[in-house]
Every structure is written in structure tokens, then in C-alpha cells.
Image (cartoon, rainbow, N blue to C red; front, side):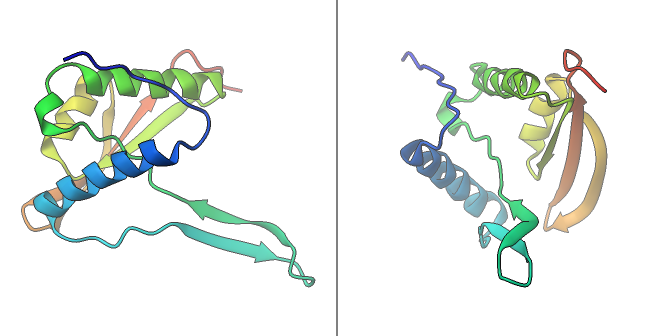
Length: 138
């Protein structure tokens, strides 16, 4: 079967929903239930106008099990890194609880930054980084 990979600047709600559904299902079976939520902490002035704050979300990489081992993970990572370089980013950061994903990220040049052992039953949380060499550092 042939697959296409498409990069988009805008939010594709159906693509985001499909990626999230696959990842949530995988994580549910592998790690147990989790409560996924967006996070916004708004800094407001005296008039209630938002002047700053924090907006958080999870960036997710998910490949269905039947498509793993076909080079799609490295392709997706490369596309994300290329886009990050275009946007002026100088590095990338990933965290994972999956030993399989950890191996993939290391093969793609990510280095372990730290780890929380025993983050849950039978797994650790591993943090990885990669410098994007083509990016200009000021």
C-alpha cells in the first residue's frame, strides 16, 4: 500500500483527531488511562486584557503498529525538523515513555537529556534533545 506524507501549517482538525485517537489508544493499552487536556495560563492586566501567559499542548508522533518499520517515523521527524529550521528553531526536544520510540529517536540523532526511572509500572520517562545544525544560532 502507498502512503503520502503531508505537512501543513494550519490546523487540520480531522488529521489531528486521527493522530490523537491512535496515540491515545496506543498509550491506553500500553500505559493505562491518562487525562489529556490543553493548558492555558493567562496573565491579565487590571482591565482583564491578556498581556502574556503560557499556552501548552502536546505535539505527538504516532505510527500505527502495522505501518512501523517502513521508515515513516524518520520521515515525519525529518519533515518536522526541516520545518523547525525554516521557522528559526535551533533545537528540538522530545519526551517518551516508549522503549521502541526511544530507539527510533536515538537512530534519528536525538540524545538522552535525562530520564525519570519508574515513572510508571515497567517504564521510564525519557527526555531527548537534538541540535538542528542548519539553524543559525544568534
